[in-house]
Amino acid sequence: MRLLLALLTLLLLPAPAQAGPWPREAQGWFLATSMGQERVGAARQTFGDLYAEYGATGRLTLATQLRHIPGGWRGDLIARFHPQPAGFALPFGLSAGTRFQPGRADRVLLLFGAHLGQGFDTRAGNLWARLDMQMHTRPAQLTNPVELSLSGQLGFRSARGLLGMVSLTGKRRNGVSRLELAPAIGHEIGRGHTLVLGLTAASHSRGLTSARLALWSRF
View (cartoon, helix red, strand yellow):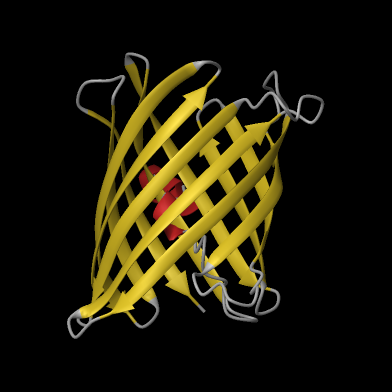
């Protein structure tokens, strides 16, 4: 029963779940819930997340993320705008938001991002590529980011509901740089629902740094 309650209450967002360059359809909802384990130093801890997106309009997507670990939680509020300038055909978005993390030295951070992508329809399914740039900064030090990241992703969803993705992310946080490789596989388990298994390996650590199981749902 305790494990069942943990599965129901723990809340993680696999990064590929975010639509990024593509706006959520107007009045459409997307929900990603997941849990797993990650390595922190020499120890491992359980984590969980809830991520939700809502298409406020055809160009404005609102999102929130709640993340829980044994030592506490954090919450993000994000707005992503998708302009459509004449002569520019690639999907892209600009995002801004706030992160709240009670109990930490930086209790509030500002989040900024730019997202660019391209999708391709084939006989076998849909193929896409995307590029995401993100910055986390303190409100009083906008020109001195706490973290900068650049992420590239290739993904494929077959006509039969099979999903495969691989992401490579470069991060620089507090003067330290690292690379993260994150493959994921999934399969549709019902109309609008996809079960996804994701793994992460990082340049600063041997073996896997995290493993997660997620459920993506569209409404």
